[in-house]
Length: 368
Image 1: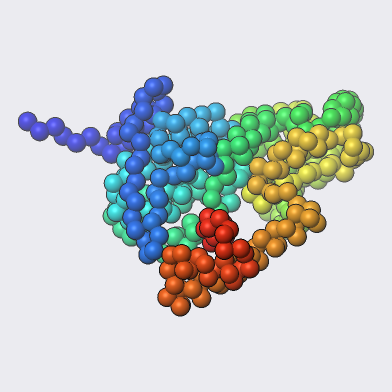
Image 2: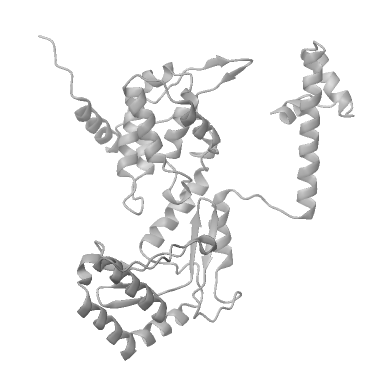
């Protein structure tokens, strides 16, 4: 009697569980190498940027473990998507866009603070098309091609650790003068006018409707460059509460209220996909040298991949880029002349004004 195939959802749950159990490792993803034009696209992921210096294959158990303990309730959806990728390995290998598909997989391992777009949404879109045996739309492929390569292991580890801290509301390793905050917080808690103002709001509105799972009500966030929607809305009870609450938080320098505890704003350092935002409350007497741990802030900011800069470094990079551009132009000329192999390399070396005895590997690096 033939065994009935397991439902796909049940199989997916088993794969996720299997990857979560210590020592239980599914066979690693072993994608094919397909010729594309004059180059071979190596589908083995070079994990020097994500798992260390050695090139390894994607492994579901290892990658699932990376998502453990993610902040902001992240990780569950990503784990299920990783499992779906591995279940569809053979199907993915048929697609000419295989490399782009697996790049989305790699982005699922990146902490949420560095996501430039909704990576989970993109992954669901791709996997849905693959499961339905449909082609991937060109716009989606163009989107993935626009994405930069995912950040490396050091950047991911730094951001993962920081996300856990900010999820707990802790910026203590970035701010030196914690006594300033403690003083302001104590002063606010003892302010009779502030306490009375909150009680007045509680009598006018059912504030329990607006608390989150942790009992916190937050004011509306300010956006970059003051792009805010400040339109006056007064039709519903919720709109009235939100307007009154925002005004109350501005009056007393709050970012929210936890049950009946007024939450005063503090200096915060927050990474975004586009850079690092430093917020200094308007009431804070700011001392840039004594208030902040600039070394820690710099370490966090470097997770974005910023390179060293300066007059000398900038000039050197510009000269290097000019040499690369010239090498590419010479390569195109050599191909037009029908030159190949050593003849092509000699032509490029001569065009660059380099000694013929120069190590020829330098040309490969310039053209890489």
